[in-house]
Amino acid sequence: MIAALKYRLRVAARNAGLIGIGALFLLIAVGFFTAAGWMLLAVAYGPLLATVLIGCLFAGLGLVFVGVALRDSPRHAPHPAEAKPKTTPLMEAFLVGLQAGTAARRR
Image (cartoon, rainbow, N blue to C red):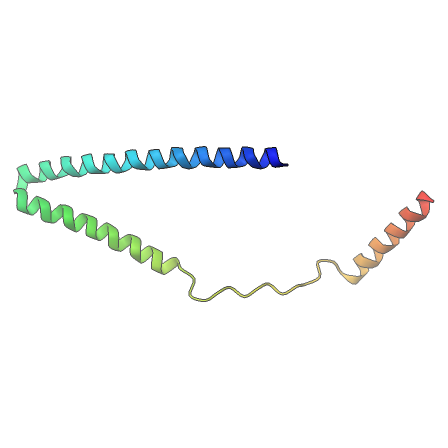
């Protein structure tokens, strides 16, 4: 059991490291794409408008993500599920009889 837990922790740590490295490379890629977009817009419309457009793009994306995060957050804690019997009384009687018969057969 301890070996399985150690294995699962090692796999989780490996996956977390790989995801972190992947996220770092994605951030670098976003930086390069932003620079390329700014250069393209700067040639077409001028550096001031290019900066404003890139800033508006990132501000809009930030607002969308904040809006999604606020919309999906639960406003109230969910009510705990009431304990309902999963079996009917008839099913319980059947199971008790089955267990009694099995116990009697073993004797």
